[in-house]
Image (cartoon, rainbow, N blue to C red):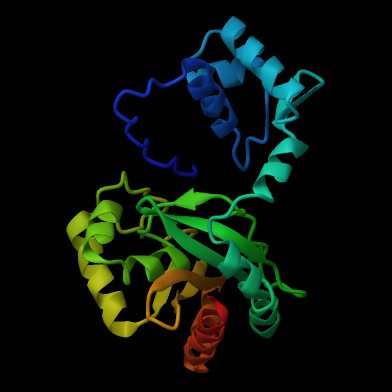
Length: 261
């Protein structure tokens, strides 16, 4: 299940508008695998009564953020319009947009671009290869995950400044498979190992049977911008590592970083 960002404490003296808070909860109730839901499901997920849920959904529908058809609600085109105005990771995403297809094509693996936000990793771009060895349907653009699994998220983990690393370790760590590191001390040790190696090979910790290669992206001042990763079958990932692909992936990351101002 995708991770929700930790709530930011309200500003002193500024009240929270309950209707808006509830509307946000409804929008966040939609996720991959549950893109269309009934009124009853949405009311249950958000712990709202059906009448309140219906009124909020009707308002969101009128604003073009939700659509209703055949008894099912879904997110609508209006959110895509809002997404086009999201500034988080924009310069990085625009530059990496030309590089990720190259990575996907030369590895036959799905390529991802990640940024760090509030102790979590946010997927800001995903590119499938022309000929894929396996269909990677998770980590859609905009999805969040804790930094304890996956190549890109762990590449971020290993290069965070101390205060941000602590925040990442303090998250409610998602245990996606039996191989996911969910112990904070073990994860801190893993972060130190990644910082030393400079790259990540994540095996079976996001989805059993798949592995990921991840490297950080730095700007010309060595400030962490994000991370790029690829996800593929375990045997294929090991072949890429044996062939020296980490060096190629790091070269791509360096190219992206040099072009970000």
